[in-house]
Image (cartoon, rainbow, N blue to C red; front, side, top):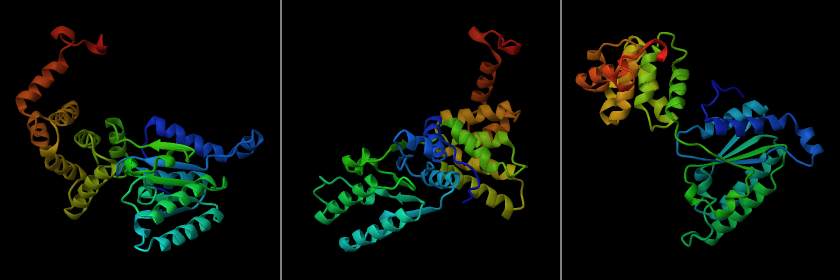
Length: 294
């Protein structure tokens, strides 16, 4: 399996995943210690933070095919049929030496003390948890959910790892935006960084959607990518908090963009821009900043 680029992850998540991948190459050493490689992981986080892309990346790294089952899509009005279908998929995946991703895991693995759920679904949860316990070490079972609050309490202890995917921080959004625009050689990185500032608090999928809109516009209008990115900035500023707009303005001013244009792109008042410039030019207690920061 080939993916265009590795997911942008926090250092904590990357450390866990790197170890899981490394375990596959040292299975003999683990066996000598009476251990097996990680068999199962639960991915938890809001939509659009990279859970599915990470599953694809792991499968590619360990050289196994990825099978994906959207549990919300297979829920049948006849729950007994759902149970049979799920068992068939799980039995097939066990023998396929693959990575199996159970997406929308909360669609089935709900709390068994929820009185609104019928008995058949509760039995299905029990069967599913038994399957997690019995998953063979030759494969890897991944489950993903956007709604951890819906999961049965027994779910958490059944997985070898619970991996939490937070909304991306500013540095991660910047890395994602830069990586997405890297193939467009004409894309100015100061505009990419300003877009990343305005997207603070957004998911990777939100950023990808905006960047795709800009790139399509550039192609269809036969205009530079820079013009399309400026259009993204202008259309996005109204809904963004002042702090994010000031951060974007600081990036643009640092790149030498004139205040008039920076105001047009970020909505930050020109008086505020001048104040920002004065404070950046002064060191502690209002003294002019010296070269080298000393």
